[in-house]
Amino acid sequence: MKLEFLGVRNFFTKKDYHNNLLIDDHILIDCGFTAARSLSDTGRDFSTVDALFITHTHADHIGGLEECAFFNRYLNGGSRPRLYLPETLIPDLWDHSLSGSLADAASGTPGIDDYFDVHPVADAFDIDGLHFDLIPTKHIPDKYCCGFRLNDRIYFSGDTVFDRAMILANGKDSEIIYHEVEFGGGIVHTLLDDLLSLPEEIREKTWLMHYDDAYAAHEARAVKAGFQWARSHTPYEFA
Ligand SMILES: [Zn+2]
Ligand SMILES: [Zn+2]
Image 1 (spheres, rainbow, N blue to C red):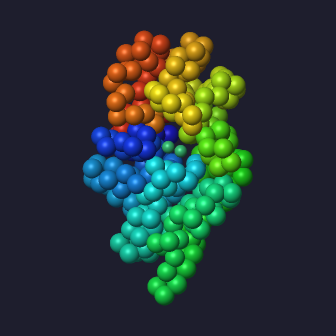
Image 2 (image 1 turned 90 degrees about the vertical axis):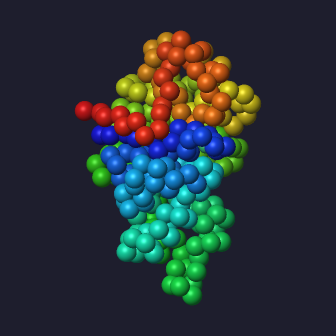
Image 3 (image 1 turned 60 degrees about the horizontal axis):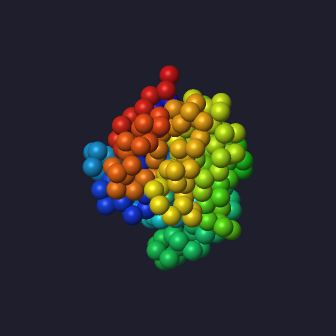
């Protein structure tokens, strides 16, 4: 298994790309509005992505789907990538986000199925032999968001407020934890100060992601506590 972040930064990044994770070079976890640029900057395009999973409907996680859809339909032979997502997200994704642009009955593309091979998923599902267990998170009140465990080995937090019990429950038997972080506010995200309160054995296998462009002021404090920083375009291989 190969993991490569197309980006590791938060919504507002101007220096990197959104926190989107490419698995085995073709399965993309979240597709923000910088995903196409991240692929392009490394000599690729959306033809490399044949399956996507979406954790929630903020634009740093779905803002690239419109380009992905148009690219595949008009520049990639009309292919329809597989789109895996919790069924509860579909109305917000299509009715309130994508359809304003993509719904085009006159061109024969009135619905989401005209662009994507949609796979609504429940709590657990497989993509090409990889097993995902979804972990709903507390990110925005009354809006669905999730993280997941991958193959019982990797815990990916998704966007979430700090939830010690969730981290301990899902992290203790994971080899590696990817957790989001921010440095101020803490209303819908997880503060570094809170992550610093985790047990050492958890901190030492946690890689921080979804961080602000101004992270350098916090880098030494996190590293001293055992955390590592996820980096864009740095493939990580799992035997
Ligand atoms: Zn979010
Ligand atoms: Zn986000």
